[in-house]
Length: 232
Image (cartoon, one colour):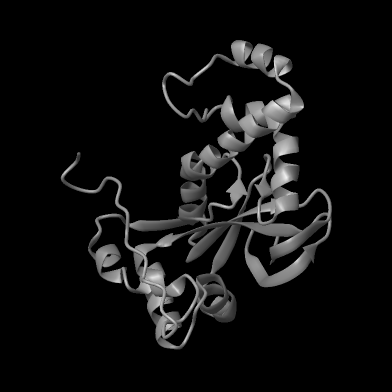
């Protein structure tokens, strides 16, 4: 293991009826570790989304625009029900408005739960929001303080699914059965593999895929879906 940097698991704050709910308390109580980390940037990625994004390109976009916070967005191809964070942007990606909506209609830009910012911005955002009674990083740290930050949206034009219910979980698994979606997620420029022994060539994978029953294939896709949330 490396002596510096590397992978760390930060402890969550124990659940307590006296404690506030939401993710802010976990960020706030780990600020000491974050402030002393050597990294210059903080990238938050919500694990309930399925996609394959090159975060190096997101970082370059963030630096070129001079944004305080960069969100990764996707334009909806049909009506999305459930929890949606809808973005209104200028042509250059500058975010003009950000709202929470129960329905996102076709053609709207929605957040993919990815937030990139300099460490100092993250620390200030978390500390101010939590110490002023906030619970949610998105709602209390970003949406309610949107006027305090210059925010841009990096447009992702590839496949994206938001899995936040049984129906969207089923829908994402069925979509991943499409060979074009499967190959984009797992066999493209940034292939995602569970392990060296599990790696298969695209030819062998396609051949095996055709022989799977729909039920087995759905289960197989579900396991890869989980991996993609952590490996992209």
